[in-house]
Image (cartoon, rainbow, N blue to C red):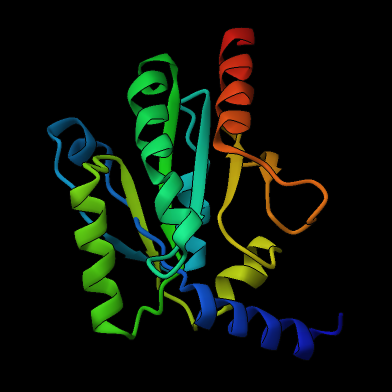
Length: 179
């Protein structure tokens, strides 16, 4: 798919499913505070390189994505179970950062789910997140090593190879057990 068609497809997918990024600092996670932080792509990339953890998972979602919201409690549970074992969690909302109602809904959703970990709202043009992550649909989950390099991705791009959050958790548990 050429660049123009890909950007249009990504923007259309974002408009359909809504995409927002949310990030919370470590001190907020330990205090139970839930915040949505605006970050540019470069700022998010800097967060991924974290020598203080074994792995980081990034859950890409939006407020208009039903499957994203339905599965979000699994992300919260993985944080509860695996943070003490060296896992960092970043919730990446791909909602439109210029849409105040969408941002407010993302903040409300995170608070209602007690998402006391890094929550980032990608502060880029709508659809840019899909291009940067090289995905066509959400939800999507990415696992990064402490060097910030991607270790594994779980996406919905291939209709014949769909993932579940149980698949993600099984993979994370195996990674943490081996390190």
